[in-house]
Length: 222
Length: 77
Image (cartoon, rainbow over all chains, first blue to last red; front, side):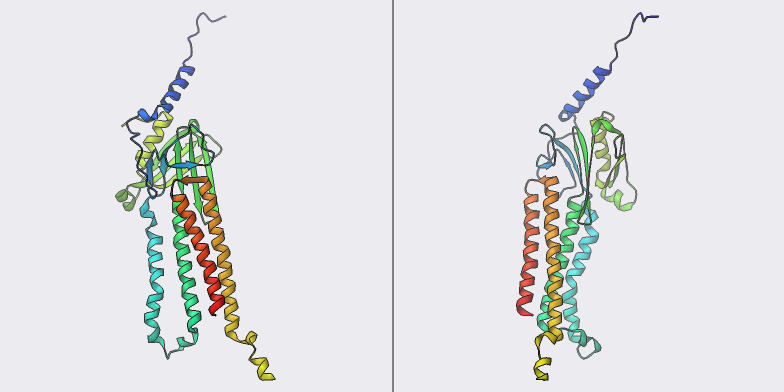
């Protein structure tokens, strides 16, 4: 039996509506004016000075995330301790003269080179720890989510997924330090090849989730 | 003649230590070169207006410091 009446589907209207919503992100109240340039920040909205590989001409970074600054304290503290070791040893050295430890002491020119090399190593530890934090970045544009994982100096992993493949976004914020400094883990579940995008130890996880939900059309404007 | 043989620089333990130091510092130069290479690679993946340049500059300075230390070690040891 042929259909008497077939109601027009709203698929095209819905897709146009969501596309319009995505393209008009600037009108959403929680997308405030672009932040001023801040190179060490961990949470930035519309950082216009940031660009990434294969970024489209009409594609703008809307959200920029890094681990919270407080997560750098352990290696900063360790670097400080390592920096202080040679002066402490220099203070102790006269006290050890005449003991069995003197046989391990080198001529002065070797000691100079050793100390300089030691500080170069400490500086490299500091620099590589900083790079590990600095290049662990998560970006959200009006089209895609980009997750850059950088660790162990020679390992980096770049994962990209389209916004329309995102199925679910949630976050966790557990523990005293995380609650105090307001940072947590954001989990993005996708229908793409990579099922999970994890943004670990990012500041303001609730706001990050809200922004991403607004982009995929599931959140609410503030 | 035996004294000349045993006084040869090549048999002095400090000369061996000098060679050891030089090798270690040379290996470290290679490491700093890898650091510079990684900074360049990551700057291509994501770049910020001024930070990328500053990071590259620090990595180059790091490499130059390692090379300088190597030459200094060769000179004074």
